[in-house]
Image 1 (cartoon, helix red, strand yellow):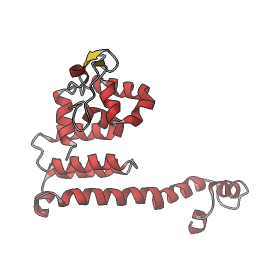
Image 2 (tube, rainbow, N blue to C red; image 1 turned 90 degrees about the vertical axis):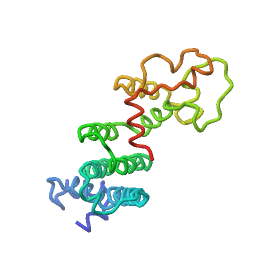
Image 3 (spheres, helix red, strand yellow; image 1 turned 60 degrees about the horizontal axis):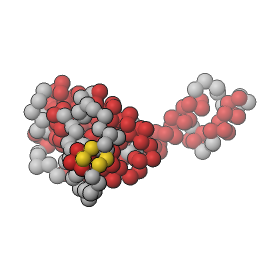
Length: 213
């Protein structure tokens, strides 16, 4: 197998077809081995660095962590999710969730709902939701007299403007799941105060708090 790792995918296919190496599952096995030894290993290392750095900031001892059921549930789920993403920002959200699970007072069902949402949402979902907790936070507030709620969002995340269609879909996703208030406020004409109005629901606020540092 070490020899196969050095071959390109095309070479493996050719050698499989010509019978030089067995057909059944060989190409897939080589690809999976390569992924495991590179991408998956890199993701695991990044996750370990991120979660260790976060936990060092927590004033807790190992015995407390070892007997904390919510922490155990969260770190098992977060480690599983981290292996599925290459986005470092997603790993930061996951690490925050694990740390916050230590003092999470609600039952495990609510914790699991939050973790499943964190697995489901893209970084863009999380950025949009976080923005609408306080649209004026951390950005220079424009002096536009009229506009839509999308204007401050794109001031915060300029790269999203090019895919406004996806952003609209994300907003609808979050509205349908009770994270954002309903309404067509993204593109409608509003006053300046309306453009910068809070749009998250209590569920959205609680979820963002759970995944924030």
